[in-house]
Length: 273
Ligand SMILES: Nc1ncnc2c1ncn2[C@@H]1O[C@H](COP(=O)(O)OP(=O)(O)OP(=O)(O)O)[C@@H](O)[C@H]1O
Ligand SMILES: [Mg+2]
Image (cartoon, rainbow, N blue to C red; front, side, top):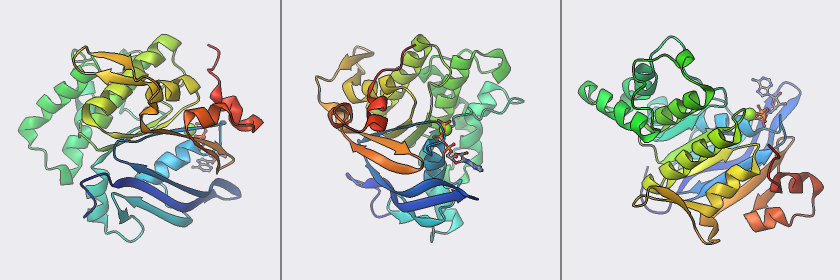
């Protein structure tokens, strides 16, 4: 916990291997994400993006290697300490992960009510939920259930639930998958807005090069309430490409775009939509 302040490493995977039977889902993966950084993870279907996210969150235990959260080795940490560390992370799951039988209010409030280490006073839950839903411009949906919302709206509810705890590290697993281009851009704008208003470290798994490009090149301006071109600054964004569980590329957007590797260069082109 000593590293909680400053420009510390919030997440570090150190030679992590994850196997499912014969399948090597992650193969000797090492990466680190510091405060103020964005990590864009691309790779073919089945290359390990979701496994990487779930391993970072502690839902999957590595067969080899170590995962450090906020500088603490999750392999040796006690359960109470792990829960405390996880309460500083937010995740948007690829499958959405909303509870169908709960209202939107209950879904978004779920982490506040259930993560005991947050110690959120019951009287504050509704105001925090309202604030998180206002952030994604769905403040009017408290009483609805997920099935009453569109796919894009459900994704926005998922973002509200991920940010409601005000985490310092956010993981987004394929937030734009299956959405039309306009809705996808709305989702990405929210992700940039969260990053740039709160300074959250962001890891994004995606199929769309456009998503990483947006995070690397656009910054949310709280005064104009718009995304603006960051002028080629690259915004501390690194790109990773996974292939069959291995990191086959790690570098800047420019390095990705000039990679001679045909598998890697596929991920440096905007998807046709
Ligand atoms: N719970 C599991 N049990 C068995 N195999 C799994 C499990 N989860 C993932 N795998 C396997 O691990 C590999 C990596 O899967 P993963 O879901 O991480 O890929 P992905 O990059 O997220 O794919 P997509 O782009 O389709 O979301 C695949 O071969 C997958 O079949
Ligand atoms: Mg996936």
